Amino acid sequence: MMKPNGYDEAKEERFGTFKRLPAGAYTCRIVKAEAVVSASKREMLRIALDIADGEYAGFFMEQYKEKQKRDTEAKWPCFYYQMADEMAAGKLKGFLAIVAESNPRFTVQWGDGFEESLRGQIIGGVFREEEYIGTDNKVHTSVKCAWVIPTSEVETTAAPEPKKLEAPVNSGFGAAAYDDIPF
Image (cartoon, rainbow, N blue to C red; front, side, top):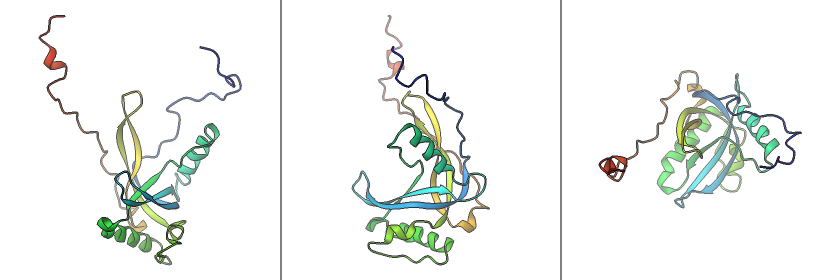
């Protein structure tokens, strides 16, 4: 392997040295909201969040700025997704009620300004640890916003149980099916 360009000038980075957001409830600020279409072709809102106050205020902005130093096409690190089609009208109404309860001057602005009207509003975000399979085929964990609550409930909401990966189903073609073969 040849030494990469910029190696000598690069700042040493190590995995696992970054600050991690503990699971729990936080007051969050909506940084941006946009209407998008899900993989299943349903309308939804993709809502970028950041922690609004306390020890972790600005947590995701810090992560974003660090990513931008290494990647000019860095993506925002925290989203909450809210389905927004006819099948999820009640859940969308619930989400907007949480925004209104947490922001007394907020009123829903339907039409062209809808997404922009959400920007800057505060809500409670409940973050939980979730397992995933990494590119190294090992189980890792991350902390993600699982659901939202009114800001008045943040102080009394406990951290939820972690979301574990489902155990793989043995189809009968695994290693146990080949234990008798004399190699």
